[in-house]
Length: 219
Length: 184
Image: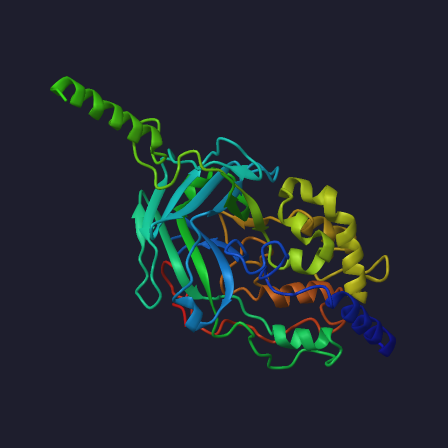
C-alpha cells in the first residue's frame, strides 16, 4: 500500500460516503427511513435444534430505552419472509406476519397464492402461529403451534458496528478505524419478529435463498 | 310490530352485520384483519448493507421495491461503478478479494440481494471455513464486508479500513428462542 493509494481511497470515501449510510439496512432509503416499515436487519440461522431454522426480521432501529416502551408494530405493515427453494430467486414459500390488537399472527411456511411485490394474507395456511406482542420490560411471550415458534416485541439491536468512526473516516477526520472500536448501536433497541420452523416445512433443497420484505397495506 | 316482522328485521340486521364484517373467511372462520387486505413492498433486505453501500442515492427507494429476480439487470452497472469509486482494491483488472472474486464476480454475487442459507450444514455469513451459508446473530458481517471491499486478495491491502474492530454485540445472545437479548 502506498500513500497515493491511501489518498485515493480516502478521497473516494469522502465523495461517496457523503451520500451513503453504512449500516446493515437501518435507514437505508428515504422512503422508509423513520417509518414502521424500515427494516434494520435480517438473519437466518439453524436453531437450537438442528431440525429447525430461525428467521429474524428487525424493524424500527435506534430506539432508545425511553422510546422503546411506546414503540409498537404497525397493523398496516406486514413482515413477509420469502423462501426460494428452486434457485430462481422467486419465492416458493412465504411466512407472513401481521399484527392486530396486540397480537402477532404468522401464516406459513406456505406456497403463496401470488408472488411479487404485492400480496394478500395467506389466512388459510396450515402452518401458523400467534402470540401476544411482548410488552417492554416483560418476559418474552412465545407462541407455539405445530412445531412453529413465534416472538414479536422489543429486543436489543443485535447489530454491531463502529458507525461513528466510519462517519469520521467519511468526513475526512480520520484515516482508519480505531482499535478497539466502539459499537455505535450499543444500548439501542429494535422491534423484532422471530420465527422458528421445522426445516421439513421449507422443502427438500440443500440451500435456500431468502429475503424479507416490509409490506404496507394499500386497501 | 308482530313476531314475523321482528324476525325479518333481525334477519336483515344480521345480514347487514355479516355484510359489513370484513374479518371473516369464506368458511366463516374469523381473521384478525380484513380477509381482503393487500400489502405492497416498502422495504426489503437479503444480505446486510447491500443497499446502503452499493446502491446510489437516487436508486435506494427503487432497489427496495425491485424484486430480487430483477435486481441484477437493473442495478448491476451502478453497483460496479460504486464499488470502484469506494475501494481502490479493485482498481486493476486482475484485482480480487479474499474469496478470489474479481470485481465482476463480487458484484454478480451481490446484485441479487438474497441471503443463501444451508438447510444441511453450518449456517454462517463467514466463519473462516463456510461462506454465505446463512447469517448468525454473532456473525461480524460488517468486518467481513469491509474485508471483501478493501482487503484485496489476502485481506491485508488497507488494514485500517478493512475491520471496524467491533467484533461482537454489546449484550449476550440467548441459547434458546427467541435468541435475541432482552431490550435495554
